[in-house]
Length: 395
Image (tube, rainbow, N blue to C red):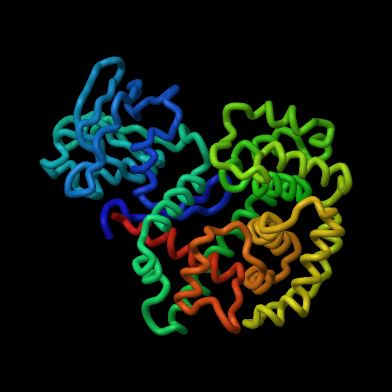
C-alpha cells in the first residue's frame, strides 16, 4: 500500500467515515478549504500562493510550493499526513529527502502534545485542516472514491470484486456491509444520546435530502430550526439563509436544494408529527432477524413496510431512491437504536438508494448480483465499503 493509499476511520459529524490519505492530498491540491484564519500549530498565519506539484513518487507529496508564513514568502515542499505525529512515525525527521519541506499539512489535530517549527530532527510548521474544510469529510471521501471508480478501466475495477471463489467474495461483502451497518448504528445511537427521537429524524431527513453535495447546509438548517418551527418558514427564505454554501453545479433539477426544501416543508405541513407516526407504524413490525432470500423477504414484509413509510408516514412527499437512502442511512439505524429491534437483515435486503451507478454493473459482471441475488442495499454497501478501504486505487 502506497503512502496515498493509507486509510483511517473517523467518526465525523455525519457518521463513521473511511478516509484515504489521498483524499487529504486532493483537498490540498484543490485548495478545497477556507483560507481565512489559517494558522499553523506554532501560531503562524498561512497564505497559499501555489500548493505545489503533486509528487506521485518517493519524497514529499508536493514539490515547489509557494506560501507565506506570517507574511514571509517561503518556497519548498509540502508533506501531507493524517496526524502531526505521522511526521516522526514515518521517519521523515531522519530522511534527507524531506529537508526542504516548508509546511506539514494534516487532516486531524495532534492526539497528544506536539510542537512544530522546524530545526534539525524536528517537524516543520504544521497546519491542521479539519476545522477549515468547506464541506463535510464524508463528501470529500465519497467524491474521491467516485473519481477513482470512474477513472479505472472496466477490467481493472471489476477485479476488485471478481477475483477468487464466489462464496469467499460474497462473505467478504457481507462482512463489509456488516461493518457499514455498525458504523451507521453507532452514529444513530450517538445522535439519540444528545437529542430527541423527533429531532434526530428531522436532522437525518434534511441531511439525506441534501445528499450528497448539500448535506452540510441542510444539516445546519435542521439544527437552527427544530421540527415544529421549520414549517413557519418558506423554502426561499431557508435557501437564502445558506447562500454561499450550496453546491449547485451539475445538480439535476429534482435535486436542487430549494426543491428538496419545498418537498420537506410539504411533508411537515401534512404530517407535522411524522417521526411519531413512523414509530407507531414501524415500531411493532416483526423485522426478520435472518434470511438470505431478498425476493422472499421483500414479499413477506419489506414491501409492506416501505408502503407504510411512503404513503402513511411521509404522505407521498419523498419517493424513489431518495426514500430508500433515507431508510438505509437514517431510519432503520435510528429505529434499531430506539427500539432494540434487529434491523440488520431488513437493512441488508432493502432496495438500493443513492449509490454510485457504476457499482451495480460491476457487481453483475462479478456474479455478485444476478439470478437469485437481486440488487440489494447490503451488496452495494459492502462493495462501497471495500472500495473506500481500497486506498482509492492509486494511480
